[in-house]
Length: 259
Image (cartoon, rainbow, N blue to C red):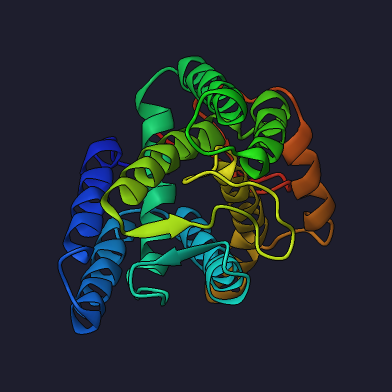
């Protein structure tokens, strides 16, 4: 399965422009940006193999559930208009593709180390020198570090972390969204953005890698996952060795080489 390396630049650039435009439009403008972003995602997915498409769709589904829960229900963060902009769900798919492309455009070891050092430094800074105390974010950093250390898909997670970190810092700086100073109902100090926010993306990615073979199977009947897919996906997430140039699609035997 091939994935254009240009996605590592083109898609983040689109997302940065999208967030900037959002600060200038009304609700109707957000609807237009949402339709445009769905179209961009469809175009980006078109040249990819079914399994990669299914992974991106899985990320969109699980991330949307996370967005509704975290923003609209719990109120951990709020978007500018206190809604869930229509462009956010497809944007998660673009973030995932950007992260994969980035991890395959550079040396995998360098990407993983950059993500690990960056996450650890950010977490420590949130507890010491940043203007807002970030205890909640620091709690999420160890989870990300475990996946970067043990997972066979750590290069993918590292690439996604770097894209997410850049977009979070950018989006909060221009006012597209803002994180609450404390977790509602818990009172735990939180950053804006929190350092451990990418830890949530790990779970989106893990779940997407789990369901992708099933989506392909039910959609085309070409890849039948094993009944032990759940246990396999968990094992895939904690194994230490990840051959460079390969990406585990699930804990089952299927693998996809992404260039």
